[in-house]
Image 1: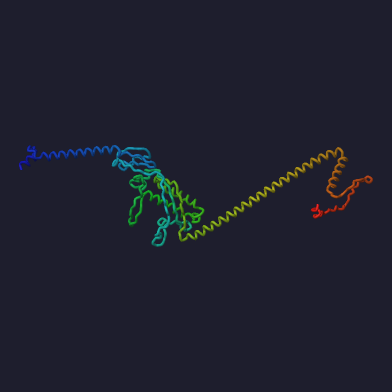
Image 2: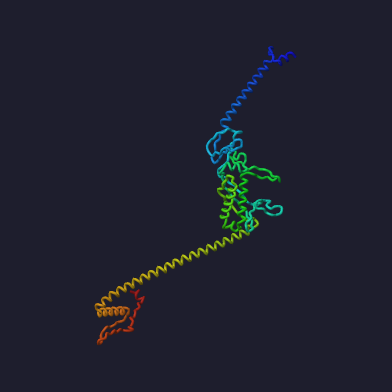
Length: 378
């Protein structure tokens, strides 16, 4: 009892009974202090070195937040900030990303009352009250990482381990599982755009000749909705992979397609025939015009030659009319007599008049037929 009082009162135990315990306690305290010192030094090294350094990967952006408030966005290079919990580094994918959307009927497409709802059952209702299904591919890109992160329900870390984090899955009040996030938002906006455009189009234009216009109209409407949402996303392309009618009405649409193909074939044949006839007519027209032009030039040339000849004769006639008249008369007789075969004519005078006597109906020369046998005998 006295010994305990001496210890409590602070008197030193000179007997040495507590030396081992005190030494053990002192050693434990020294080790604890050493570990604490190492931990503090390690924490300081971690805090002021690698933990606060980050480098921006290609096609990514890094948003830096300080106590939850955005202080900057970096798209390249390496940077250092005080690490978590002071600052947080949020990576956002800025490269092109694809969305595959299938607007096809589900197994339980009809509701309880047998009605169909386009936004719910993946049906598209056209302006002329027809149903179609479609498949799309959308390409988009994050153009403003800060607005993208602040506006949409993005995950806490949009990119982890180099991969884009999928949208969050949650269960609503009815026990139905669904998703929420940027991808879900963009998908819902696209469904709205397709429903709006399809409701103002006719099924014939959508399924056949107007597919290109339909796809472009959907792209414009989708880009308008995304721009109005002001969520830091730009739409780069919208591709229509396939559009088709319901399975139960496919046969009727196939008949329409076949009739349209037949009409196109006949129309193309008619156009080809029209082009052929037009080409043939044009060729014949050109040939007739060329022949008429040649004949015209020939007649003009002959007329010009006759005119020149007449002018020359007329000039000679004015100098010596009788001589020229006799020469022309003789030439005419020569031309006429040259055309008469097997005939003889005599040109003489009887008094002061000239006479032309011709042998009419002369006796034809008999042709002697050769005997073939005689010819062979020779």
